[in-house]
Amino acid sequence: MELTKLHRERAVDAVYQALRQAIVSNGIRPGERLNVDDLARRLGVSLTPVRGAIQQLATEGLVEIRPRSGTFVASLSAQDVEETYRIRCALECLAAEDAIHALTAQDIRRLKDLVKHLKKHPKNPDEQSAYERYRTEVHQVILQAAGNKRLQEIYDALNAHIKIARLHAAEVKSAARLAEDHADHEAIVDALEAKDLAGVVLALRRQSDRAKQGLVAAVQRLATQPPGSEHAAAAG
Image (cartoon, rainbow, N blue to C red; front, side, top):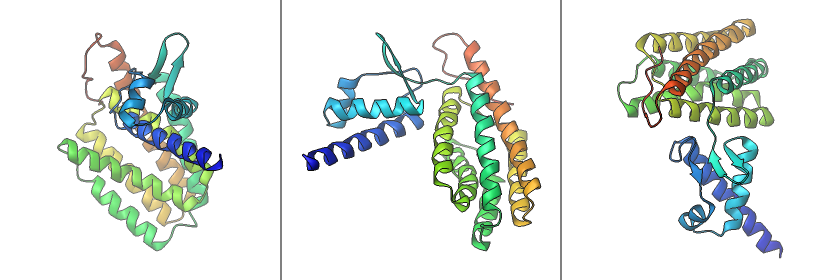
C-alpha cells in the first residue's frame, strides 16, 4: 500500500508539472476548457492524478473550477495584473533586503552580464524569448541570494500569472520601453553592488511600475477587442 501511495503521488506531481508548463508556455490558452478524460489519455495516466493536479492548479489560481460548467485555464483582468504586480514588487524588495549583503562577487558579475544582454533589443521571437529569460534571471539571482524558500515559492506562483497575462495579451514592448527596462535593471545592479538598499528598492519599484503599466494597458486593449481577435496592439 505504501508503495502504491508513493507512486500515485509521483504521478500527481508529474501531471501537475506537465499541465503547469503547458499553461505558462501558452500551450493551453487562458479561457480554454480542460477535459479530464482527454488529458488522462494524452498523458497516459488514470483520471485520479489528473484530478489531483487540477486541484493543485486551482489552489495556485492557474485554473478555475466552475460548478456545472467545467474547468478552465484562468485569465487575468487588468485589476488582477495590477494587484499581482504590487505583491510581487513587495516580495522583490523584501528579497533585496535579505540579499544585499549575501550577494557574492560572482553573483554581481553574473548580474552585470545579464544586464549587458538586456541592452540588446530583441528583433524576433527567439531573441524575445532569450531576453525574457535574462530578465527573469536578474530577479532570480537576487531571490536565491536572499535564501528564503517560502518567498521564492510565492514569487514563482505570482510570476506564472504574469507570464500567462503577457502571452494572452500578446504584449510587445517598444524600443523606448526596452531602453527604460534596461536602464532600470542596470540601476538595480549598480545599487546592489554599492549595497545601497534604498537605491535598490527605488529601482525595483520603478521597474515594476513600468512593467505593470505596460501589461495593464495591453490587457485592457485585449478586453475591448471583438470576440475571436487574436492580436493585441503593442504596449507603448
